Image (tube, helix red, strand yellow):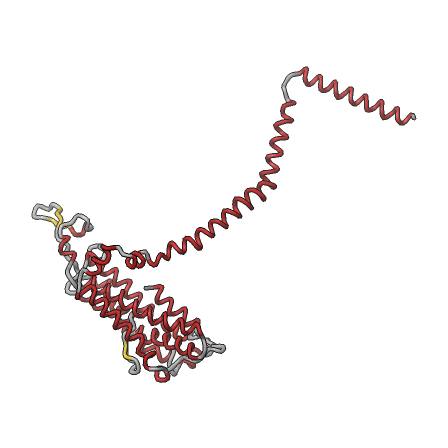
Length: 361
């Protein structure tokens, strides 16, 4: 989810729509922060359970958390009515980015064409997995009801019997305290109205006065108005968002259990998605292992064998060998030392006789 929203910001900047990129960063702060904190509220309600497969049917138990998370989902999926400019926060920024990508493509930017197609596909995927979260967590069969009395739950699932002894009670989801709900309500307000309030200043008619020259687009086309674009471009984000919603509803509500049955078969598509497109393995093969290979080459080959081998390690090795061999002369016997001194005296006298006799000649 974070990667998809960052992707919108990145390719908006890539096609020169810096204002739209900044607006999405701004609106993203509200609805993404809301979704993260709302997830924490759900975990608290579920007594620290974090697996959506163990949830379901929570909307009646935690209605405030459900309402704010629904607002965040509508915002992150960019629900809104094109042309009327009425929608949640993500609608204003995401649609502006997708429109800017198409506008860049219409002005001859090939990267804009790629960004437009990827942006529309990402909008559909975002809708599917976001509504999947809502349906699995808050609707459908309450999976937690079957876990009553299970020892896996945290200590706050325990109750005291009449004698004061601790006993395991059924898991009963509860709404979070207001100290957690008040920040969620404030962020939900931002997820609903932040786009409508700030879009005119960021990307609308007041953008020149708002940015005051802070953003300069050299050669990039201006931000596109929805009225100047083909109808299928304007309605494409909402269309794929609706398709993602219906698909998630079909799999997780109308045919509840279909996702589990698909996962149980562990087919190639499931394996590909479950392993996150094998991105970690690809990253490991192309970057981690290559970096390790280069590191080993420079470390073992360059540093250890060349630099250390010819430098400090080599000098110390030569010094050690010389010292070890010269140390053999230190036997500790006096007659050995006397013999060496005698040899030295004979050598010195021989040299003196040779030197002086050469001078006499």
